[in-house]
Length: 53
Image (cartoon, rainbow, N blue to C red; front, side, top):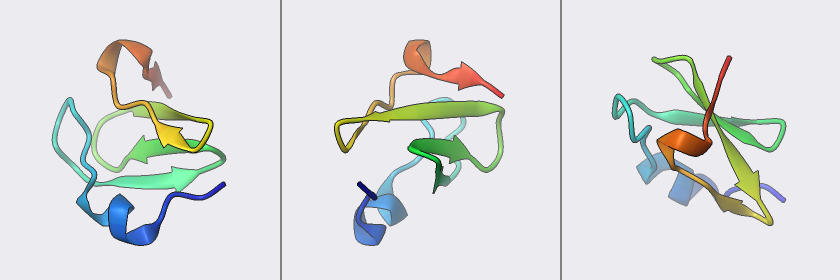
């Protein structure tokens, strides 16, 4: 399940406030090395749940 592009356009990385892009059921920050999971179609934008890539 993909995130609606209109919603993705307003989401930002909680750590550095840069934009996010959806790749392989994760939201990847375009600036810092964090990847946020998408669980059951819902982005989990918690820094402690993010993985470093």
